Image (cartoon, rainbow, N blue to C red; front, side, top):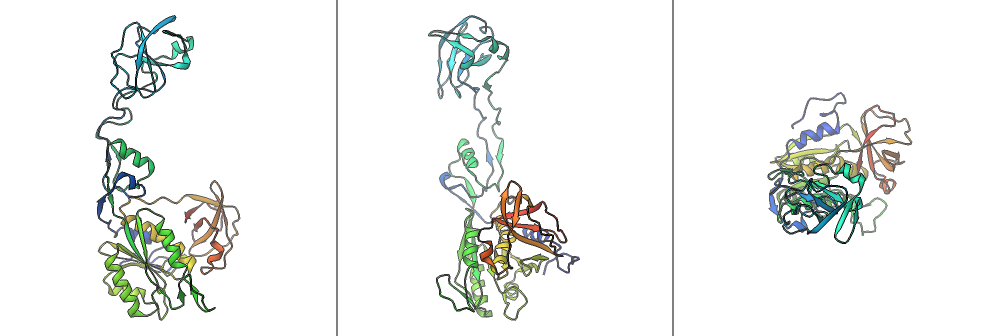
Length: 404
């Protein structure tokens, strides 16, 4: 077992963050593939975006107006000799005359400035520049110069960047129509438990419908860089868990198990993970809910063992599994947690890290949701996420907020 020195809490790591960092250091990204640009959003760049030419590629007008030489900028009538069209090579700049120009059109050599339309009086064949514009028509006014956005060869986005709509636009701008991306992370989701039935079943009072599989599939599957595969429920039998786990490990890029990870007589997941040759980085963390959580790795492939209670599954899935899978996906970093203050802090504390469900109420503000514990999933149906409260902290924050 690979762990750091024992923390003051008696755990191998003194915080969820420290345990997660240790696991991420062992995770390796998946392989690469090319995809059409239209399908690239939500994937992760495997190659940096590099400018193939300067931006803008030539001097262009930033306004609709009139291009003019410095020598021809004067009070009184100024002839208009023609137009500069967008998307075509500009004409030579005449003397003793201005050229009408539109936003984005190329600016000919020799132009001193572009005078905005609203700063001139327009006539059929000439213009008069308003007095206020004479003083503001400095060299380069209303001109965007070649390369002022970036030079050819400039690095615009590094590998590991999540491809957003602006990133897609940038790829198109530099002519990349089939970008290299990391493969989607294929995640096997294993739900264990003798008491667990499919959601469509009619359970006895001592049985449960499986909310864990559906919740995890939703939590993970909403990300374009993840392909979540929900496997059939696995009973609490060592051979069944071993068989399901070994198959999932062989066919997937990551495995997430729920249940069977604590200290009970039928909690077989830790031993099965160890027997498979994986290194357990952490098992048991100073946090509530989710204390029994397990993180392991085999050949760069992450394995997460999450507790069986549904709130614990969601909390540890968001706090531990998602960032781990992001590292597997090749992402340089996962979205940092914003910080919020609690509008209804109740003064309660724990000696370990406390993940408390909240509902956002405004910018930088949230309110605690009353819940009966890690099995009370109905109470968090309308939650937006949870805050992570440090040990002994009874204040109102700000605390790190992790949204679903």
